[in-house]
Length: 417
Ligand SMILES: Cc1cc2nc3c(=O)[nH]c(=O)nc-3n(C[C@H](O)[C@H](O)[C@H](O)COP(=O)(O)O)c2cc1C
Image (cartoon, rainbow, N blue to C red; front, side, top):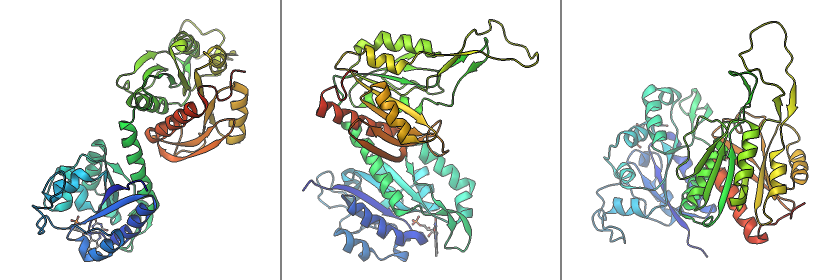
């Protein structure tokens, strides 16, 4: 059996500490090897013995235990340093207002807080507290510091709280905490992979703009976040990345060759010009289907009703699938608001692409301008569902599928049509 990944579960002193028992159990079900660290306050709520019995590991709660200076671990003989450096991730559940404050400001007065400072592992916190504590500007400011530092925050739910109040601050579902741990570990491991080395990936991103006059345009709600996440992840995994980008508010991902464009026609020209360099093409841009037949050369004035005549733009995805080299793989994107899978399957067949990522953009939680996304990865043979995750994590999953397709089919999954 493959060795299980060690994850440290920090349990702090909140009323939801008992729920950490279920998180530990679910982490085990998910194939991890949880080790538990408790604060002194947490021990008032749950006995360390409970965690020791479930995990089969000693529970650490004091900086000053007998083992503190002589654990004899491979990395260091100092217990908190050893724990900090041998764990793949630290997840704190429940994260009290106190722990969030200590993490944010670098206090290190017990084992958990000292370990946090001594570790480079990704950190996930699942806050739980009374709604007033949760909403307090101090707590929110501390969360913002942690968020900016790259700590993953599993947002609490709203509902009935143990203090008798109703509101935000109730610990997220245990499964959501486990999913967050799996997600940060998936993206960290992907960062260490180089399974796209030797590939040149051409990615389109953002929403094109079709001018109406010199100051106005027809645009769409695409933020470019999904395409940029794909570019950043593909680069991390060793690919050379050509990113053809319609306007976005995003910084250029490091190490990518950025080709800025504005209109659908500019995107088409740039994509076709660079196509022969690419072994994989991922078309994540939201390209306008129509443009104004004759854009005004001067700013239009308000002078009663006006009719804009529109004409269709070129179908870039279709052209790319026709013009590609036989060994170049093409992945398209479809944003749908109804009959998502049926429309996605029809587009997959119509466009002759090797795979299609379909997003349901009708909701507010995922899709356009959100940091999260969900959808399906369709190939002629298979339908894979991607549950809601960050766009970065979804980018990794899409690239996992691309790598898998290349290894099982060479380039051609569907062949040129
Ligand atoms: C009965 C009881 C319940 C508590 N529940 C919470 C809680 O849900 N969230 C929280 O942030 N603090 C809660 N506290 C306050 C913390 O226990 C307190 O701030 C403590 O210093 C936290 O220590 P720690 O962060 O080191 O675990 C509670 C205190 C008591 C007495």
